[in-house]
Image (tube, rainbow, N blue to C red; front, side):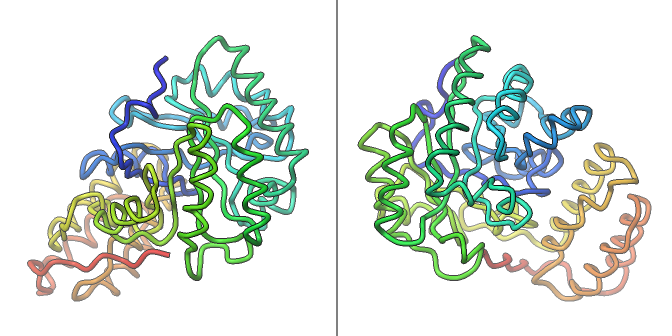
Length: 330
């Protein structure tokens, strides 16, 4: 298998992995509207999948039109990483990524995600276990890591120097420390410093955090000597962000809500239809009447109800030609 990271045109502008967000229905909508250079699955717990292997198929399902697509995994048990690699590799992903930056308490309390930052022993055991398991599959799949800045410059330099010693193809650096979670200023100078360390070893480096537009993404890459950036929260309910300087009108937004709902209902069924609510919440913003539309959509139970809500909105007299404003990133 070719290393797709080496084939991507720079700067790389990708869709960041988001838990419970970047699932198959969302990625299909994103491909339909404006396909990023690379996309990632929502991250998957290796411990959970080891205990509940029957849940794997939905979490790693994808369409060929989503390529290049990277499967992101997280956890704290090296043996669990080893045990799941064969199944993920055989699914045909273009890459595999270890999450070493998630700030969620549910993830860090067990030692995974952002808790791995500067935990050199466990981080080495996990990366080594993944590399060994990948080698045993006989498939040459590029490995990447997503992490974030450490608590200070010295700790960050030590952390990224450590990571640069592994045969990684790429790394994504979120420009906030663990305590900030997903809020507050993004330290792009810190990302630039990390990129310098990684690129000395030929590792592609992407920045992440607070990007609101393609223009801003390209400016960050140029200013901070990055190979690319990933856009995350600003893409939720706003797949048009990957179009340069484009704002959808309300009719296009309503049509997208219906299409996204159809995909989610087909994929999950009525029982888990609420998986689309995060997206409905993002779509229904920035235009007249959006608040009541959003409230109604978040009470829906199936597509019949969604279509009636949209139909009622269209017949209510709200203006539908004005361009909607994009939601702010965090």
